[in-house]
Structures are given as C-alpha cells and as structure tokens.
Image 1 (cartoon, rainbow, N blue to C red):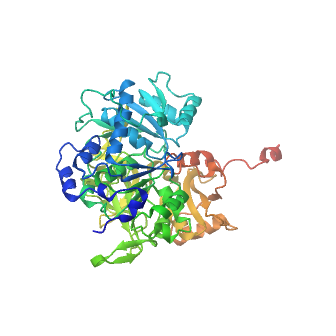
Image 2 (cartoon, rainbow, N blue to C red):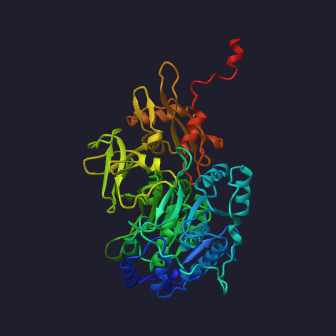
Image 3 (cartoon, helix red, strand yellow):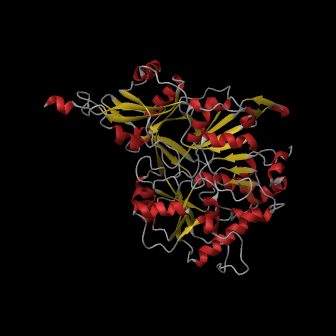
Length: 573
C-alpha cells in the first residue's frame, strides 16, 4: 500500500497509522468501547506522539488556524480538562452540558468527561438559545461549558437553570496537565458495558429535541468492523464536516483515532467552506450530513479540490438523488489490479441517534441507477428490520408502514423519559419514526417521516418522493421541502405545499406551480396545491444539524390556502 506522503507537508505523520497487528489487538480487547478507545489506541500505537488530526479553528490557535493532534496530545488535553472538571465537583454519572460549535471542542470535552465516568450532554451551538436552555434544564445538567457568547445567549433566553455548579468558557480550559492534577484515585474510569457515556439531542424537526442516551458498549457495536474494513490510513485522508456535538461526529473521530487516519476536522460545515478546505487538504474520503452535500452539489466543483475523492459518506437522513449524482461524477475510484475508474461512490446511510448508527447502506456509483428513495438493505449488525402497520403487524412487500428495527446498537432510551422510551418500541422492534416499504429483493425505500405524512382526502401522500422528483426535474431548484397545509373548502383535510430554494443566479419559472406539477404528473405523483420560492428564513428554516424544520414550515404556512386575501375584510364591510 502506498504511503499517504502528502500529509507530511501539513504537519501530520505517516507513523501515526495503526498497523494491522495493532488493530487486531484492539479487536481482541474485551474492554474496548466508547469510553476507553483513546487509551487502548495509545497503548498499541507504534508512535503515539505522531499527529494525525488537523483541527480547524475559527479563531486560529496556530499560525495557519490549524491544531495538530496526536494520541499523546489528545491524552494530555483530556487529562487537563478532566482535572478541572474533577476539581469543580464532577463525578461519575453526572451529566454536564457542552454547548459548542462544529469544531473539535465537543470531542475533547467528551473525552475528558467520559474519563471521569461522567456523561457529556452535547448540544449543537446552532440550536436556538431558548430551545437549548430548556433542553439543558430538562436533562438536569450539573454544570455547563460553552463559548462565552453562547453562554450569554443561553442566560439571556431566561431558561437556563439557576442552580448550575459552574458556567465556563470552553476556550479558557487548561490544555496541559499540571504536576499535581486533581484526578480520582482510579483514572481513567473503567467503564462497565452498560455505563452511559453521552447524551445527544435529536434534530427537533418534529418537536422539542429529545435526549438520546449512548452506552459504552452499545454505541461501539457496529463500529468495531471499521478496525479492519475502513479505508487504509496509509493511503487515505478524511475530511469530516460533521458537527462534533452529534453522535455521528464522535463516531467518525473515534474511528480516525483508532486507525491513525489523517483527518481534517472542519469548524464550518457549509458547502463553500468544505470545498475551499478540500482544495488544499485533498481528501480521499468526505463525511458529512445531507445539507453539506446539497450545498456542495450546487457549486462549480474544482477538480483540484474533489479530484482525489473516491468516497462520500452520508449519515442521518438519506441524501437526494440529484445531489448524489452531482457529486459522484467527480473523483476517482479504485479499479481492478491497481487501476482507477472515473467517478466516485456515495455511501448513503439511513440512521438516527436512536439507532446508534446508520443501519441501512446504499452505495451509488455513476454506472448504477438504484434510486427512487432506495436506502438499501440493513447492515450486518441489524438482527431484523421490518415494516409495521399502526397495530404492530408486519406488512409484506410493496406495502407502506412504519420502519421497525431490532439491533444491539439501539439506544438504551431517552434520558429521564421512560414513558417515551416504552412507546418507541413494539414487540421488540424499535420504531425509528420513518415510513418505508420493502420490495421483494429485500431493499427498503424511504417515503417520509411519520409526522410529515400529508393526510389528504384521497389518502396519505408522502413528501419525500415529491421532493425527489422536483430536484430531478427542475434544474434551477437547489433544494425543496414539501409539507401539509390546510385544504380549502370543500376538499377538507390537507394538501401538499412546496417551498423551493433556487440555485445561485437561477430564476424561477414564470408559472412556478405549473412547472413543478408538470414534473410530478409525469412521474404519476400527487400535484401540489401551492408553491413558493424561499426568499425569507421562515420559508426554509433549518435546525441545528441542517435539517429542514418541517414542523416550523407547517405552522408558518398552515392556512396559506384558506387565509383571507389582503384587504378582504375591508371589501366585505
């Protein structure tokens, strides 16, 4: 395997690569899990002082705005942070709020808190302060760290708990271990299989964000295979545009740590920022959420930035076909006998925080046409996946229903909400909140989220196939969202409504609704009753992780077809 020599000029060391014999030792280690991976990786590494992580900072700590991190340096920072936390009274089982941006800060504080047996309650810094403050209060966090500005915004919202043991700027933490650190007698903490290590919030697209729990062993299951199956660290470099306050961000940085994989951790997940960074980092792997890929797909991508990419990895919601096709025409993939082929592959993983990882996998390549919202088949760790009706009965091929999954990776439950945990499963199947159907080949197709199904007079209408058709059929549309609005008399119930984002410089068709419905009718889909070009934030609101907040859209446009026209009251009097 050729050496990834290009990383040397960036201050990263090929010696950080974890050789196969070390990875096999890790696989054989019975105590390896989310709470212990750093120490186990350091114990078997051939050179724990060799840097492998590049951390991008909005306010650069070094001349080029990048921090270079090795296993030794990660351990030093972790121990220094843990000493501060322990002196502040944090003990085993205490949840501590970490309100952070998209960079590496959340990962570092997660390492420190888990080393004490405490629980990092990670909160995306893009979450609205009032929502974040209510969430932190609901969890009952012992203390809070965040940027000074972020903590100020939480205070100003009026919802921050009054009895916090501390509120501290995460950028003021000591980053070197003192001669006499304040650490417990047993350090780092030795996790049991069921010990909780982390709380992550859901996106909040269907209601107030829920606190999903993650266990030491549970969250690591399904990821062990990456020790031998992930692209080799000697020939690859990864760009992570995931928010590190999300379980997916923690998961992929854990993978990079265990493999010694050269990785750039972005502090800005926008498409433009990722494209700019790719121009000098030259990644072979990119991992991000769908919103980043949607923005990248709308750019004029430079071969010098994406020409080395062989794999795009998406997790969370499944990505749109139009965005996938725009990306996989770039880059080069490994071929047979050391050759390469034009184009890259896109690994789409439908998952959720509750499922612990992406439990479905579909690989898209230029030669394949496996689309129509196909999310593929369950990955090996899944014991069973099925489609259920409202009463929990299993449905056969071609019938739409709720997705149910049995997997050892599923969350232990929601923090402080045993009732919701209980209602989220039926007959042993965890209900993911998705509406799907399965074909006779065992492939699953994603139709909608349960709260987003449109209840029309003619029956249920699913929003995702409509969005897919619009993105494929209207090249001027960069993104779109379809939601239910109140139907005008005499129809009753609901009808579909769309809001669309145009690509930069694109103009809307003279008859927007007609042009969109022409595309839908050609594919045999339900026509829209109205559509609007998004020109205001409330026309296309997104949450902390970049997902469109369809609940907010429904509330904003609910009566758009039934509200009185401007001046109607005056003319009727």
